[in-house]
Structures are given as structure tokens and as C-alpha cells.
Picture 1: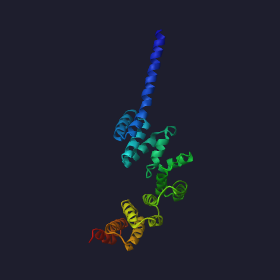
Picture 2: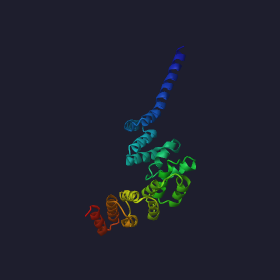
Picture 3: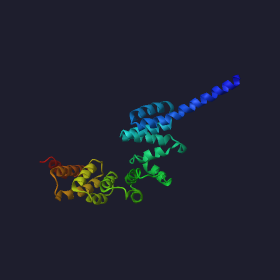
Picture 4: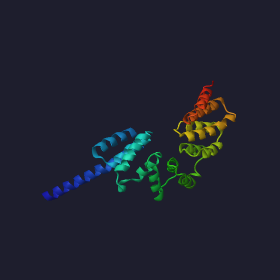
Length: 250
């Protein structure tokens, strides 16, 4: 009888342990579904510091991403891929890597998802951006044709090109499909991104063509501010100063 009781106690202890372990993952998901990402970050950070489990790193990265802390999310997901065995890497982690298109794992994980027929329309814009950022325009064009050409409207498409640092000719054509106000707003957005000298000069040429359009005062001032920023990054100081003055209404 005593042997049976001991066996029963051992079995119960195993069941309790399994229950506690299996309860951790749904807890993260439940907290996330209710928008408690700060709590997810706190719990996952504490657990990773104690147990060094890669699943906690994923949830750390996810919490940072959901709170728009992109750099911190990237650091956490990089550490995840550095520590995780291939068999441990989850589909969710691969998706998150693609959603961070300027990160070092976005292209590789996007390619894996596509090979496994797991690429989704919601992920495709980020994968496209990652490919463009990596200078892989041919593959990016294929992704656009396969996943995006029938889904993106004119403004999101132009915005995607800008954020991907696409060629200025492509951006120019995309902006031409918009009204002047939308185009200038996106040019201003482009001016906030760090650009190479040649890229900045090319975008300045695109923006300068709008000077000859009939614009509202607000749009014209925003255009001048964008031109000043482009010329500053292109190291064309005389033009940068000219448009800075014009943007201030002088």
C-alpha cells in the first residue's frame, strides 16, 4: 500500500510540474490579448534572467515590438536566433523577425516562411521592405507581384517604396498617382529618413518638380522643408539654406 501511495504522489508531482510549465506560454498569450504588454515584458525579462529560456526572449521581443520599441525588439529577437536551436525556432518568432524588416534576420526568415508556404499578405509588405533594404530588388519585385500588386492602394504603395529606399524613379511614378497634398506629405516623411547623398539628391529632384504645381500655403511650406532636409543630407548647403528660409515663410 505504501508503495502505491508513493507512486501516486510521484505521478501527481509530475502532473503538477507539467501543468505549471504548460501554463506559462498561454499566460503570455492571454496577457498580450488583453493588451498588457508591459506585464509581458516584465515577466519574460524576469524569467529569462532566471531560466534563460528562448521562449521568454521571443515574448520580450514581441512585447517591445507591440510597444513600438523597435530597436529593443530587434536586440531581443537577435539574441533569440543566436541562442535557439533550429528545432526550437517557432513560426511566430520567424514572423516577428520579418515584421522587423531592417533587422539582420528578416530576409532569411521571410525566405523560410515562403518556402514553407507560410508567407501571409500581412507579412509581405515587411518582407518586401527587407528585400529592398538589402538591395535584392529582383526578389522584392517578385514578392510584390505575387503578394502585393492586388492588395495595396496607391498611397500605401508609395509609402512602402519610400520606407524601402526604393529607386527614386519608382517613387516618382508612385507619387504621381496621388494628389499633391498626399505626395508632399510622403516626401516629408521620406525626408525624415536617413539617406545617402546620392539618394537624397535624387529625392530632392523628385520633390523640386512640385514647386511648379498649384499648392496650398501649408503644402508649399512643407515641400520647402522637405527640400531643405534633402539638400542638407546631400551636402548641398546653399540650396539647403535657401529652402530652409523659404520653409519659414521668409
